[in-house]
Picture 1: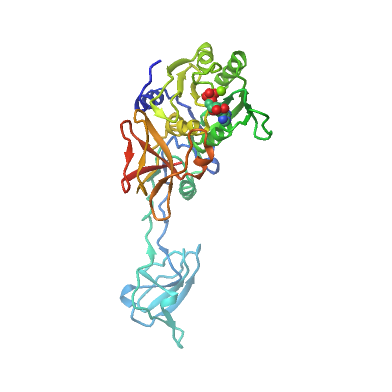
Picture 2 (picture 1 turned 90 degrees about the horizontal axis):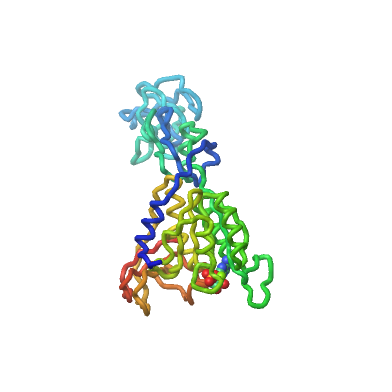
Length: 393
Ligand code: AMP
Ligand code: MG
């Protein structure tokens, strides 16, 4: 199968997205979920004119006068008296401003006189009243469908009394490792063995993307064993990630096994580094990625292709967060025929610097990195001082 550009691969993957459907959950459990309907407010916020400081509520026009204190208004209490000329009420932060008052001066700016009256003693004051409905009006749409829910969004839900929310169902993602050389992290690898890194990295990436991972174990480099585990994954999940076994080696069974399991392979080579053997196919029940075995490759391909797919399946249009900083030194690469992604750090001085990186097996380099930067096809050198876009990982 021919090698395709990253842009083409991205287009194919996103166009294959299935829809996960929706469900209703408590707002408490909605963190990292994608909202599947607008949320509107059932009231004005603030619901009343509210003091934003502890102080004295009075008329602006009376600010220079000695004022009689007629009441003390605590938060949560309804004021009993309206403010007239020469009057004020002592008021607490968050309390309702009494009728007749149009400002609150701070307790720090006040002077209590021997007469028991109070006088403004500051030199500058704001109004210190937040007006009913100034943040949110009754009926306003406060959160829009398609939003990835963060803690501050949950605060908005709480404030408008939205205790159950419609969200997209979590995409169910099967994770499979493949390779006879792999042992699980709890084991000490024997001669010529290594620990299974990818499954745990991918499970964490899946979790970070707000989906539900299901780890199905290590498939041995054996066609039947791989077939069985792939079949199980396809029947149980919407998306299947299998790492390793997609290169050109004698024991790289994954593409043939996928086809036998009824997966239509849409691409199996992408013009990108690391991650060229990334394979993608569709089955009526699930979408399937064969990701390269090396952990940096599988990590980066997840970020570039799988994460946007998961989000799209859950109705979230993701725009990866990037920051722009100049290169600390120039950086060159040997071959320019592929789009390359390089792990970098951002220095305290605000420069971008590639980490010491020995290639796509070098997972500890990725752990040191703050982000990754891309070199497009044809670009050999990034000059010192050139501003690059760093994608946070
Ligand atoms: P493969 O794609 O199976 O040819 O594997 C490419 C490289 O990635 C080999 O060096 C494998 O040992 C390594 N590799 C494959 N799967 C894993 C895994 N789950 N964790 C860590 N390394 C792996
Ligand atoms: Mg292998």
